[in-house]
Amino acid sequence: MAYHLDNPRWRRRIRVENMKTKLLKSALRVLGTVAVVVIMAWILVAQPSCHRNHPSAIKADPAKLREHVEALSQRFFPRDWQHRENLDRCADYIAQHFRQAGATVEFQTFDVGKKQYRNVIGRFTVGKGQRIIVGAHYDSCGEEPGADDNASGIASLIELAYLFGRSTPSSPVELVAYVLEEPPFFQSAMMGSAIHAKSIAGDKAGVRGVIVLEMVGFFSDEWGSQSYPAPLLRLIYPSRADFIGVVGRWDQGDWIKTVKTGMKGASALPVYSIRAPAILPGVDFSDHASYWPYGIKAVMVTDTAFYRNKTYHKSGDTPDRLDFNRMAKVVVSVFEAIRSM
Image 1 (cartoon, rainbow, N blue to C red):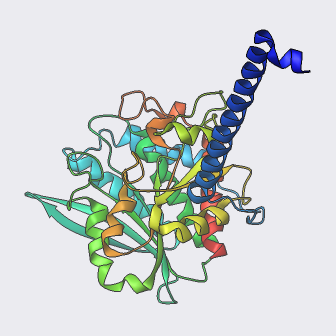
Image 2 (cartoon, one colour):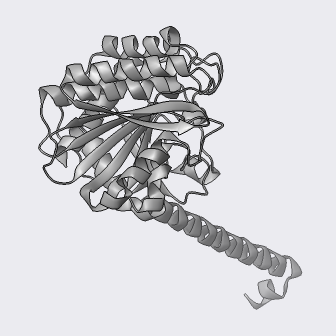
């Protein structure tokens, strides 16, 4: 043995083996650290839970959803802020369906410049405890069809009204169709949702929370069809755009989880959530953010918009690209989530 240890070739071999061992240990430590980071991020950001709702016997009609989307994206086209006549036609259309569903309907009017715009509010079970607000914007970005953005959200809001009309909620539900979500008013005090949020700020204790439907109609089963604003999220969430997301701000994890677990299991559609700082691109990209300054909990239910739908804010955002069967499952999931609260 002494002879072998004195041999330069054996000493080199021992040094190489020791180096390999050290490198392997370092690699394992790095992998272990990465695994811990990913697991912690998964727990904190995705809020995994075994809790889920019971499968629903309720059905939403895909044909009705298509009818609403085609009305907004084709009959009332264009419906941007400069075409107020078409926005008025949208508002009247939404109000008509809210009334037919059995809601008490009110227009919330406000002026921008010399023009008047309207939010449409439909109420069910008025005056019995904290209310849940469900909203969606009905305007589009420029002269684009806006089938997914956001005729899909309004179509879902209308069909939710019919479900609540047939099954009266035990607590108050307020459905709000907002105007002026899109540029040039996006993230300004003139957004319809900002007007509505300000109007209820004095009664925030009477609001359980807000759910905003923002683009809920585009899905894909292709591998790699879903993208994300940060690389780490690819390790946590699916590669296929075959799910619906619940998106909220970091400090509102309880409301995010309540909505997600209420939606999960109600239909066959997978439901994921993300709890993240507002600086992460996309987290505050809709009407739900209008409620945050007033301390009102609010989340966005979304197909993730431009992270999967490549016709976002383009002329190709047309009804034929939407999956109305899965959109119907979104409606049922949101409906059952609210009923479970």
